[in-house]
Image 1: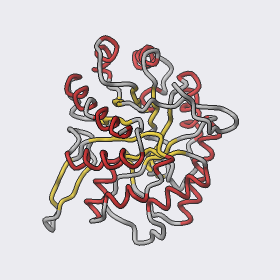
Image 2 (image 1 turned 45 degrees about the horizontal axis):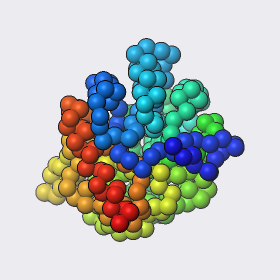
Image 3 (image 1 turned 180 degrees about the horizontal axis):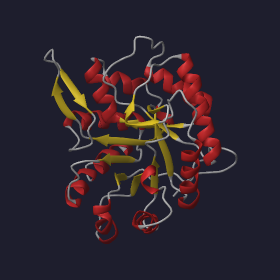
Length: 290
């Protein structure tokens, strides 16, 4: 496993292999260890492993001996108006220090208000004020963890009237200010473009693909709004839709091979179903070399 040359405070973080990965679920633990698969790495949600012991940490320690691990945060609330929760950040640092993961990522979103935690990843207006706040939070996270992080583009269901910066430009500015990398969620691109009637392919064309350290693919649900229009929900509860696979193929042709994850977080399938979904990734990655 190669290491990223970019670092924060002189420390390095391992880099994920350009292979398929899956989000780890406890019911797949034995299969991941005991049966061959198309998976080269696994991703965990950080908040599930911030305790002091028990089966989750025991499984993670064993899993990390066989696979590179990507840690994906869902609770830092990078975009919140209030400061980063220091206790949460310190628990995250403890996890990163002993696990030494191949990657750490978080979302361009907020999920806290005052003392309340909202069980969702909520979008933000793209303004200079928001840019300054998020950049400051990312710098704090990177300095605490001692390594660069990846920031994931959101799935959006509406646009803010006060936004004065396009989303891709907003992400580019964050990278310039903080030195972080990006996690490109292709399903989020498709969901947002469909919901806001924009061009998903144009979004990929303008995206700073050279800064992408990881790609996510996931399933979405389709609903009809009160006006009869389609509304897509980023559900992570089913197979990846064909149009998302097509957008992913286009992305890989432009970006080259990138570590790519199947996210399937609810309605968890049996391992053979998830492994079969992940196996669709490698032939597409191989097109990057032709």
